[in-house]
Image (cartoon, rainbow, N blue to C red; front, top):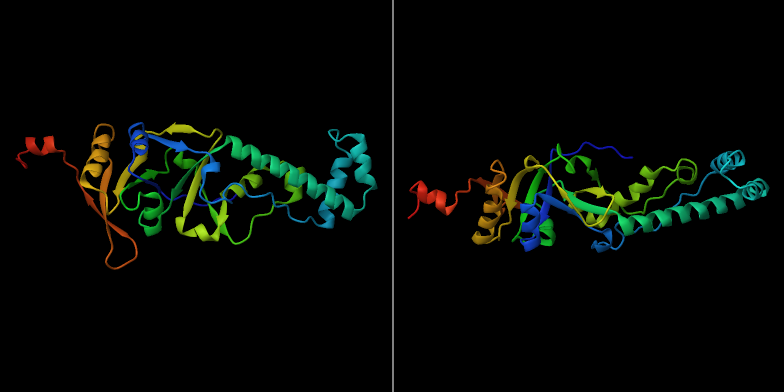
Length: 271
């Protein structure tokens, strides 16, 4: 399994909607089915099996010859097959296992996605309600954010070693496919987390949410609703208002302190 240092803060873009507000109020993140993803290849990659070397084929032949789990007729078939014929048999079996693994993943598992960046124009356009939504900053010291893995971007689909599939039952290697996307999506700088069941709402600790970044086009009423939702359950959250940068192709943020109308009235700073 690939190991990479997690960022201290990970970001989740949200459109302003009744559902996003419910999740915010419930302090929950949703693990959705990968079948709903925009990228048709995402998590639905056809199993790619790397062509095994002669030594790998012979290693598997020897292992199956002494395995109590392999029926005698299969052991006999393996013993009598040429290296090339056995290679084809092994690749077909490994492909079948990987296809079954993929189908089970798509049917059962849930995925939630995050980004390393909170200022990307395309991310705000695609996932942040066309600049009218908000972006949540979570600490990776808390679950489920502590369990994120980085998405790798590639021009080629990943391939898995036959030996890893048939001999080691290496499911970490199989899971690598679900953390791999086309290079076309690299701008997302994505990290993701898996759950054993799709449709799960995972409740996080209040301290996990450290910051909220508002899109440059969010209206004042929507901004205030988000602030009011959080005021009663997480007073330590920091708020940032976004605007389009005049110097770079990104969203720039300025921190602000939210004061409700009633609080302002009590303090005599409004009429």
